Amino acid sequence: MRAIPAKLVLLACLAFGSANLCLADAPTMVGQEAPDFTLKALGGANLRLSEFRGQVVLVNFWARWANDTRREMPALNRINTTYGRAGLVVLGISIDDDLRRAQDFADSMKVSYPVMFDTGSEIGRDYQLGRLPMTILVDRSGVVRYSHLGYKRGDDRLYLDHIRELLRE
Amino acid sequence: MNRTSRLLSTVAGALWLACACLAPTARAGLAEATPPAAPPTAGDAAATTAPPATGDAAAPPPGAAADSGDFKTLDQEVQSMKKDVIDLNKDLFVLEEELLFPANTQVAVYVSMDVGTFFALDSVTVKIDNKQVKNYLYTAREADALLKGGVQQIYLGNLKVGKHELVAFFTGKGPVERDYRRGATINFDKGVGAKYLELKISDKVAKHQPEFLIKDWE
Image (cartoon, rainbow over the protein chains, first blue to last red):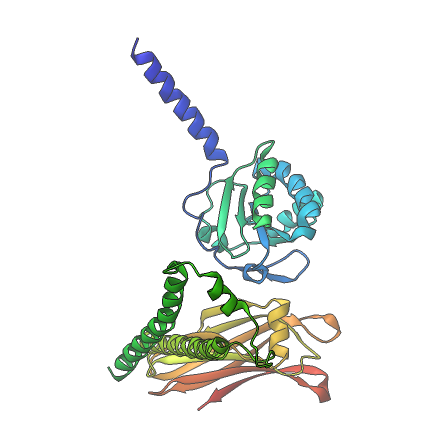
């Protein structure tokens, strides 16, 4: 009789843990200064993260083959359109090896924010990418405040809560 | 050793100044926090609030001059402390560079740009002895800063004494907005002192083309 509640508790912990993992704050990056990078954007301009200091930056790492990317991009588009004027910068970074196909994919998704390509995967290593897509929120002082792994329906509301909080600071 | 002792003395000076600045503030805070020994009587209040009878109403109260003097001194001390901190930071930076890149092996490469009518800089790749040591992408702001006369240290490293080759590749937009990629090479002798090389981008007006030069600063 005593073993059942213990198992239940264990299962509940595991379930809670795995649910949390999808949207968990990656403890390795949160609280640290966001590693700086310069990448070429789809339009040809070079963008450097540190030049957005003073603004809240959402960095979204994606890959064409990651299923959740297709669902997340429209949500990020909406967030960029709504909060761009309030001081939010959205940057998309593709880690696809095939640059041309990644460009075609970004074009087909009609993204309104700058999309860059990390073909050497150096930036991905700096940010300790685990699962794709991965979304990171950097505050006005350049510190990583939130890190989201993967994407599932409703996560954009969580992003919005965090973005509003950071924009208010 | 000499530099270390100088650094230590600067740190000690900065700490002393910090104490000197904080002491009056702390005293003032204590004075504010300490309650008056006895409540002022009606007569005292009248004496403190009544205007001066001599007619010099415009004259500041007796303590005001002393207060402004104190503030001035405090401000001077803060400014001096700031200067000390900046000097200390500079000394630490120089010391770090001297340790990591000793003069007998140091090689520094700089980028400068003049006019820029025929070339919009996008990136520079530096190879020393056929090994890529730097690939730098320029944002619009950085390219603009170079056009305004800024000089960027693109690479700082160590090299053995002897003959070396540096190759720099410049990419960007050339005349008529065309993609442009050019290289420049220099063979140089690394002596016992530090070596400074400058990658210069300028306009060749006669040919309506950009020009890429590498200057060896002796």
